[in-house]
Amino acid sequence: MPISTSSVSSPEQPFVMERRRFLVLGSAAAVAFAARGVSAAVAPTPASAELPSSLAVAFIDRLESRAAAIGGIGVLGASAMMAGDPSFLSRSAKVTVLGMWRAENRQQTVGVALKAYYPTALYSGGDVPCFVWSHLSRSATDAQRPTSFRIPIDSAGLRLEVETTAPRSAIVEKIRGRVSSRIALNDDDSRPRTREAIAELHNVASLSLGIDRGESKLRAGKYVLAMLPAGAATPDWSTVRYTPQNVSGPLSVRNVLGETAPAFDYVIVDVDFAG
Image (cartoon, rainbow, N blue to C red; front, side, top):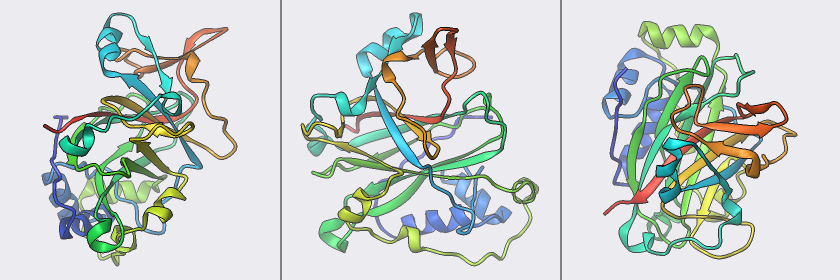
C-alpha cells in the first residue's frame, strides 16, 4: 500500500473535523479522512476508545540512528536526557509518525490513534488536540503508513497522546466494506484542554524543552512510545536496540536467549525542525 503523508498547520476548526472523521465508520467519512493524508484504517467510536495504562518513552539520537542501518544501536530513556533543545521555539517541529509495531504474542486486532496538542492556550484557554495519525493492526508484520505534520512549539514542548481500541470484527468489516453509518458524533475530545489537565493524562508523552530530571526532553531524533498494559514495568532501555532494517520490527531486546521482540506494542515518531 502506498505511503501517505499529510501536513497540518492550523489549530482551528479542521481539528474538530478530523475528530469527526476519525469517529465515523461509514465509507464517505473514511474516504474523506484518508484523502487528507491521515490513515482511515481505524475509527473507534467514543464507547470503544481505550487508553494504554501508561506510556514509556525512549530516544534514538538522529546521528546515531544513521549508523543503526549497519548493525543497530542502543536507545536511551527520554527522561535520562540532559536537556531539551530550545531551538524548536523559533523553528517549530516536523513530526513524522513512522508506524506501529506489535509484541510477538499479540494476536488481537488493535487500532491506535495519535493526536498532538497544538499550543493555543493564549487564545482559547487551552491547547487543541488534533488527530494526526491512525492505524489498524492485524499482525506484527502489517505495512506501515507514515504521516508527517508540522506543529509550533512553545514553553510546553511537544505533547503526543496515544489512544487505542480493540475493534469488534463487525466494525472492521463495516470499515472495509465501506457501508454507511449514522453513528452520533462526539466532539468532547476535540475541545481545548488546559495544560494542567493534559499533564495528568497517563497516555500522553510530554517532551520538554527544560532540564528537569525525570522529564522526557525534546530534541531532534526518533522517539519510541511504548504502550504498556496495566501493571507492566517500564522497559529496561539499556537492553533495547534499534535496527530499522529488521523485518519483524525495528526494536529488539537482548536477554539470555539472544535477541527477541519487545513485550510491548510501540509507535515510533521522528522529530525534526520544520524549517
